[in-house]
Each structure stands twice: as C-alpha cells, then as structure tokens.
Amino acid sequence: MIGVFDSGFGGLTILKKFLEKMPEYDYVFLADNARAPYGSRSFATVYQYTLQAVKKLFSFGCPLVILACNTASAKALRTIQQQDLPKLNPQNRVLGIIRPTSEEISKYTKTKKVGVLGTLGTVASKSYILEIKKLYPEIEVFQQSCPMLVPLVENAEIDNIAADYFVKKYTSQLFEQSSDIDTVILGCTHYPLLMKTFRKYIDEKITLIPQNEIVAESLKNYLSRHKDMDSRLEKNSSVKFFTTDDNNIFDQRAEFFLGKKIKSETLEIF
Ligand code: DGL
Image (cartoon, rainbow, N blue to C red; front, side, top):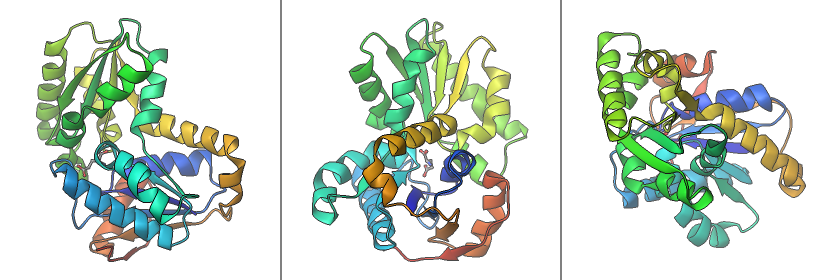
C-alpha cells in the first residue's frame, strides 16, 4: 500500500488526485486530526508527530509513504530520510511534496519572481526558498504565511466574508513584497479549496499553482522509474482511512475535501 499522511484533512486534496491518476494502487490515508494543525508547532514537535505516523504506516505494510503536508515535509522529512529511515527500513521510502512542487516552478515563471503562500511553519522553515534556489538560482522567492486559512478550510468556511478578508489580506501582503511576482504556489494542501477566492484577489495574468496535480504526476513518474518499489505495491484499487480523532467527524468533513463519502477508523499513533 501507499501510505499518505497529513496532519489533518488537507492531504485528502492530494489523495484525490492520486486516486484520479493512479486508481489501481492500494492506499492508506492517515490524518493526525487529534494534534492538527501542525502549522504553528515547533520543528521538534512536527518531527516527533510525523515520525510516529511514518512508523505506523510502515507497520501497516506501506513501503512508500507520502507526506501530503507541506508543514511535515518542511520540518520533518529530511531528518526522517537521513536519520530514521536507515534504521527503520532502508528499503522503504518517505517522500514529501515541497521538492516536486519546486521542480516544476521554472516552467511557469517568466519574471523569475515566485510567491509562496503557506502555513507559519512552512514559511519559517524557508524550505521553498532553499529548494527553489538549489534548483533554479536565478529565481527569487517571496513568502507569506496565512495562519487563518487552515482553520477556515477545516471548518468548511470558504465562501464567506471571513475567507475573503483573510485571502485579500495575505495576498496583498505577498504582492507588497514584489509587484513582479508572476507565479504563486499555494503551498498548503488546504488552499486548493480556496481557489475561487484566491482568484478574486490575484490577477488573471498571474499563474496560481495548486500542488495536487503536480504531486500526483510526480509520484506517477517516480513509480514508473522505480520498478522495484512499484512491484512492492499492491494494486487492488482499495483505500483505507484512519484518523487519530473522532472517526464520525472525520467522515463528515472528509466528504468536503474528497468529494465522496468515506468510512474511517480511529487509530492511536502515540
Ligand atoms: N496540511 C498542512 C500543510 O500542507 C496544513 C495543516 C496544518 O497546519 O497542520 O502545510
């Protein structure tokens, strides 16, 4: 199975694309709703929580785990890959979503000025700046944290004046840093659900990049290049959902993110 992890519901927007593009695989989705949001937590805490989730997914028999969360990818992925994976299971893989998103960016920007909207944690980690600089030193990255957006999306408060107010505020703070930005990465798995509102406040000329499409294409490409990993993955088109919090609440909210009804189970990972 492919393990897909997020702190909460946002990773479902990534899973949705995996299911559209690679429906044949078996997936396990794990959401740490009991401890979400991760966005404002310290490096040590996000690392500790993410490692617990990865260990749980390995114990389910997932040789490949995708951290479908920018905050976990920013704060925990590197340490898990370098320190923990060799001890836990060197044949297994843990992949994040910041690297594949950064790889695509040069296709879109002409001014070489890119904006990133994300959680406090993602922005503080400077992961997008570092990744993009490594790949494309000529591109300048401007960031803006949007701490109120995850709570609004988690509560399905997306088509109202509160969402409008905060999207307008954060996007104008981003463009105050540079009026030459021509590409904006929605660097949080929740933000694609606010796409309409972002479009209201970001000029049509500017390319808005949700990650789900890019991450799904990148995984598809990874699996076509890594036949050894691909052969370890079952292909019965099954999906299982686990949450660390109330599974009935998870099922109700998940429908909003995934666009279909699901049944999850509650699981302790700590
Ligand atoms: N899924 C997280 C991300 O993409 C946001 C939610 C959180 O703050 O836990 O950054």
